[in-house]
Image (cartoon, rainbow, N blue to C red; front, side, top):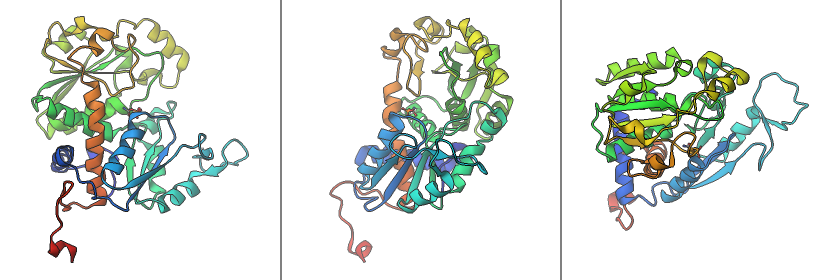
Length: 349
Ligand code: CP
């Protein structure tokens, strides 16, 4: 695996192998697999889980990592081409990324959406330009339109919970004070479609996901026996759900138009997930990628109940990313060697 930019770019068998590897690494570890290897982490945006779990994943495999946060602990970086750099940015990504790649074996990059140009964000134009500057393999740590590490961890969580491959997953828009990126809903949609689930995207009409995302997911679902529908009918959507995955996202219809968005959201406070949402889906689990705003996105009563698996999702980031790093840096045929396992004489030679 040369890059890890999207689950949608991988054959299904490869994803299933990654999940099996993640489960094996969770069970037995492989503490020397990446000894001497270095992961570079470039974060243009803040993180709690992704940053911590990537560093922990690398350390648990015997490797090491460094973190660069432009404009924080390092120079502010320019990403636009052909500009006169007489502003805040001291360095251009055209130098910075090859420099950082030279110190590392793999580069993880987080660069969120512009939030102003829907077509460019849907095409992940900026992230793909950044990734193309790296001579080393790149892991997408959340771009404008994808978050494959989150999606892989969520798939593992569904497997761990024993959710049926064709079970019903409701991806629901939720209230939030800000217009958030489309990356997580897009990644969850791809993941659930690839897994073969019956996906219902639930949102107020103004927050319908962009048609290209739905079309992509329907194509993925067609190959896995799944399905994708979209609705604003909450009662019908939630009936029989195995999973309610809540996430807020920006309105595609008013992309980059903050004033209109704010006005729209003012009337949508009821899109906070409450226990009453589960009346026709008593056994459903609640998922969210975190961070989450309590009593805005989801009520305390749901988040603190046994149906919430948000911490389990976050913990699975570690095992999922260990599998990705292991596959990228140790090789596709590398055995998993638990602590204390002996290397055969043949392998030593
Ligand atoms: N879910 C997730 O990516 O969390 P962070 O933004 O904290 O990394």
